[in-house]
Image (cartoon, rainbow, N blue to C red; front, side, top):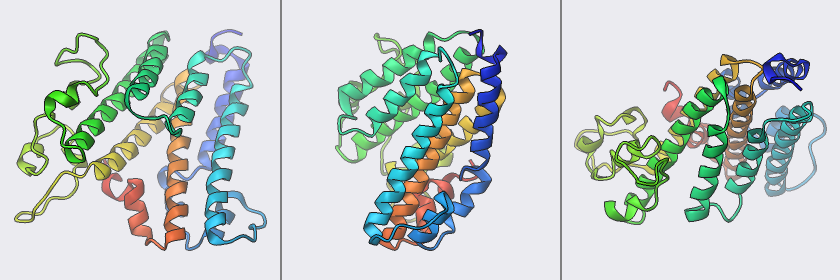
Length: 289
């Protein structure tokens, strides 16, 4: 098969992926997801048909499992249209499965991230440039979140944190393309808003009120960064149609949708108000980012 952007299969896949995305609960459609009032209503919105007659806790789990199964089945059906899909299109499934496994975290985590980074580096042309830009941002955000968690939850020193980050260059220069943003905040005081207000990603900080005790909130920032990444992937899905970039972007967009579905299902099961669920999903803290 020739290059993806010249193949009939690629044209068909992009059209199919676009159709699936137009029905997804992301972007302008996300409001429908967060406005549902019950798990039964959520099930009907997502899947239609008869709602299973099971207790709420089991219905919540059923929704999450069914949504994940559909997401992965749709993606694999897109890949099946190609005789020889790019290796990275399979690599991202492996990384997703690893992310949600019990093994995710620590040294294995960094190895998997670097494996994905090397897969991106092996691409050519626009796909390499596009995905390098996206994954550089994504890995940079992961490094930032590691710094925040280690400082806030485990009280690691800057020296201890250095060994936990992912670097593109084994010599660990201060301007490492994957670690430099994390390194720029490694000495910041977690309880001093003044240390953070001029940060490159200050727009994602949890709210600060003058005269009120403040501490940086890693969970708030994580949600905001995930939402920001989702918007970036939506842009790149359309930037270079019928490419590897568009399919990788589709996968990440749908993965974010799945995370939102899980947040809504869990929120409804626990009786959490919709505004709080939106905040947990990252929509209220970063919707205009």
